[in-house]
Image 1 (spheres, rainbow, N blue to C red):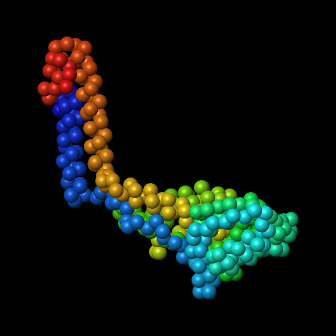
Image 2 (cartoon, one colour):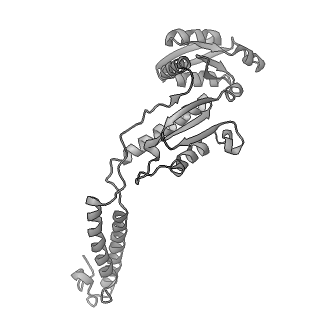
Image 3 (cartoon, rainbow, N blue to C red):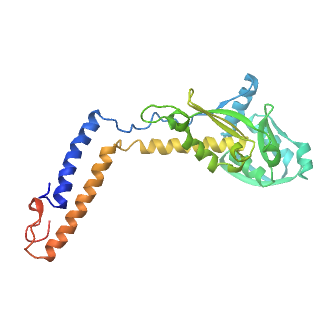
Length: 285
């Protein structure tokens, strides 16, 4: 190869690796496309059968569309309206609200259309410095401070987000996902930084066991759904191989070298022939 210029050496190496990449595509270990889409994988509730059934029903109802048009309506009447409209039990945490100087008859003014009940509650209650939790088989409206102490245990199947291409399973497979959750969602609440909440990876079931508040659990579900959507979108592209990436890099080097030598050949007039018979005498392709 000592008689070849930069372009010639790159071209030869490129040819060799292109052949290897071809073999890799047919029999090698390419990084596989994503598994079957699982954007709506719901976490598994942990509790008695009755509690689990009630919580699952409320979670489902929270995703239903709703519309409200309140103008100076007492909070108690707002609760009664939503309870009847969506057929779930909603209660006010009156003692805690009184301690926070929030009256149950606080007037509510809000008009919403085409949003989920979950979103409507967030906006209506957020304006009053209130939130909600699912507790004792009811949707309980309470203060954020009280809600932060109501931890819920859920199991998240995440095998489709943690399995490596070699099929290996282990704690290290979960680390990027766990780090993403803990760093982006309520970062000060986790056990590792002195908070009350925890997250544990179980390799055998390819799942995460998470103890968190209802609100953060909702955001965890949304984060995982977003990751699955991003994965499935990228899965439509051709699989990427290590050799394929190297071929692409060498192709870029080859193209850049050709452009550089074309420029030099053009400046030198007819004195500089290029390897491969490209641009002989004229410096142009």
